[in-house]
Length: 381
Ligand SMILES: *Cc1c(COP(=O)(O)O)cnc(C)c1O
Image (cartoon, rainbow, N blue to C red; front, side):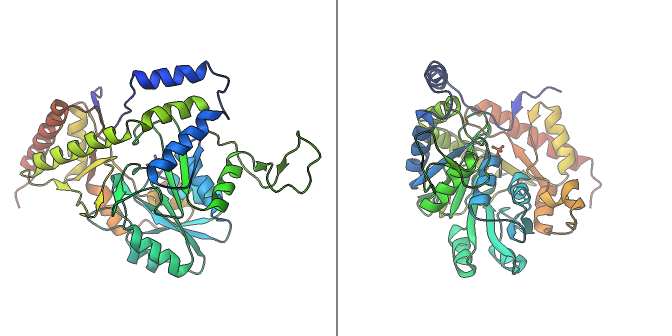
């Protein structure tokens, strides 16, 4: 069955195309002026001092964990209800990811569970704004301050979200965004780390570019000279991509408005549908609505029925510790019962700015029909 309506997709218009074409004809395809312009647009939007663009959200997580000084013998506490990259980046730097559980309703990392999971080796935490909804940043900031941990926010779902009147991006020590096509804005592949700390920003810039710098050199024999002061990567984002990102930033609020309108429409449509559990919304924050997760009984059969109807629904996420690589590292399957229960019932419905009302209505009808079918086939209890 071909997928007619995906769960997420990019919004690219003629102004984006023009921006990319102009850059292609310019002097700089990479390491040029579009990078700084895009970084400034991100930093200004989020009200943060520094933004450092990276080649992907995953590369940005790697940079953030390296800048935080995570390494062998250190532990990073995160959620299992996330894309594997959040935990994988800890492995990249030789640190150990540990999984704390989520709230059963929201799927957001639970601060009390993080406290329980902490050990002497804990050095940082990485929260995830699941589906675009901000975590309780105040609670995690207080916890990190008390324990002298670095607070990293994997905000790959939540560019555009607001927590207690403040944009996500400046609420943790390091905040990470992704610009994959299904995210709030896109650069094709791309990511960024935001921080208010000048020293962390310098580390992020170094790590992105082989650890090469002209700052603070021990010697300077001439214009040609530079030093590789630490081991880094080539995680640069090109000017072509940054031009697209900058053009997309101009429409971010418009994208957010449509996502919020779609979320409100879904909530109204499902209000009288028994057996569909929606995400609770905090009154003190505004979600970026990266995903529209619902939870249902008989998930596998409902999922299959929606796919058969041509809907590109998806499941977010298989808890990270259940993947074979993590089981092989010794992580027990019975960790994080709330994350596993959340996963067992979850389906992500189509949610992206160009989703039409008619496509959304079709989705709601398909969910209703699938639920009726699944329930009709079940023995009465
Ligand atoms: C998308 C995503 C990433 C990875 O971003 P890429 O740009 O695809 O590398 C990391 N964490 C979360 C929560 C994500 O949704």
